[in-house]
Image 1 (tube, one colour):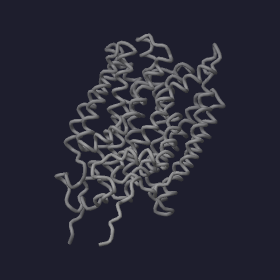
Image 2: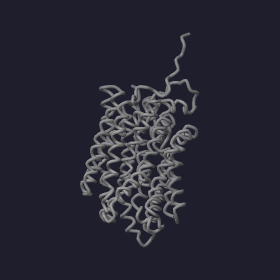
Image 3: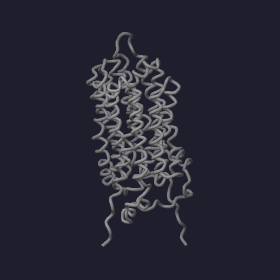
Image 4: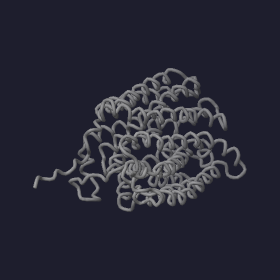
Length: 435
């Protein structure tokens, strides 16, 4: 009887899941200490907005480059190096003595985190057959949400715990050191594909057949194909608009609760982390949903419907948040928003894997680049809107206008998502002429 496939793919998936946890811990931590950093470094609100947006700016611009580097040096080596470096730069963030070093450190964290999701998507494609990609993608993305929730919850608590030992500086340093240690562990556990892993048998390697030969030379980076793909431009617009609204949770919600409603410490951490916790069930369910829909109605609508419909719900939730200054209602609506954003994220990943083929990392990196330019603009744009509509002496004023902007961007994202077509590959396989 033929040998049963080993289960090493789940070990690699679990290891990659933990990388995603570290990634979001380091991504979200600065937003939770913005008030402390601004006070100690004597920064203006707009300067702190720039510092919070700096990560997303470099993260966006390095997406495609990171995918190309991973293609050249291998997924495992690149991923482990990225984790080690962004953890080291998180330590550097905690050592900042002024705006220039703070912004530079966050730019470096962004550059080195940029390859994380494109590489993860490529690993999923290399290790998992088509009918499991949505689920595997949702578990990795779930790791990111879990890391974000833990970061938002624990960072204010750690600042209090380490109040006599550096406060926010010690908290960021701890996150960075733990990530550097895990980078070494990940390098030991992971491989690019089952055929290279000493624990995997041939049956597991055969679960994912080699990618078909394409019209591109082996190893070539499809930059021209990326730029010409209307399908990927739709995905890019969708992700850009999503992130304008979603990034509020990790860049501005802490400020909203502290400056607008006086919440600090563990209370602030608990309320700020609730939307991230709420999103986790959506992330897990999204993988099953998109895989099930793809089997029933095909790739075209199996990917487009979970993304598009969920974003219209997000728009409605942000619209409700714009009508009140009650922070309990606002946080509840942000929880609804994160649930439905995360319900569609596995379909976003699966879409990139479906259309990207062997260029999955490049396809996801291209759209993720534009998406994170939206995230980079988010704290600057929403901060400017809030201050522009603020009424002197009213701490909660201006925030409804920011939520209204989020509602509009989610609506635009939903429309764009419904036109995405996962059945159209980025690069079509070469047609071999008959002999």
